[in-house]
Image 1 (cartoon, helix red, strand yellow):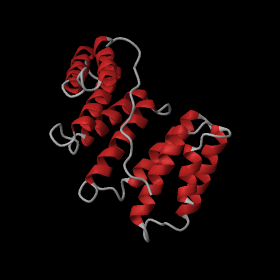
Image 2: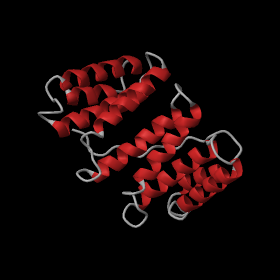
Image 3: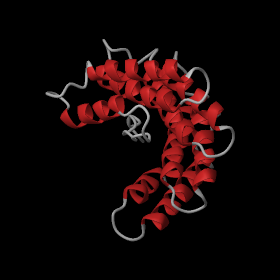
Image 4: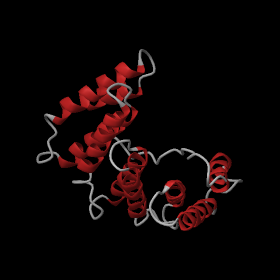
Length: 207
């Protein structure tokens, strides 16, 4: 069921919306066997796959699907602790941050604070020394969140955004990562513009 769900989620033929619904249905079926108590690791993996499917879902309303995305990632964190699975914990924090940044329900200011908190947590594991690429991506996402931040002093938030973008540029150089460098530069130079979406760090190995 899990592999079939992955196949449907990545399927190229037929309608994308229908394929995602089939993927979600397969993941939910798998959860009837892979319970948190009996198979905690696989259960968390399926929750992660579900979260990704909900985030891509085309039916049911974007706001509702983002709520399901957040719920699934939070469930995965019941197993993916920082102590036992630091990499998966950090990756899930980043994906949660991305979901909170896009969240449509609730207070926008609070959602952005939650996004910032998730990115900062991820940086406890994704250090520049050990994970430079992931660290730089998280700095970019953090910069976008600071730039869009509603709470606090606007001038200070923009300074924090610039600092995060500059940190990312120290790794995502023009020579080594030309496309990523261009995105980071655009974000850094357009602090008062609309948010420029960047790719989120991809979740690790799936089952």
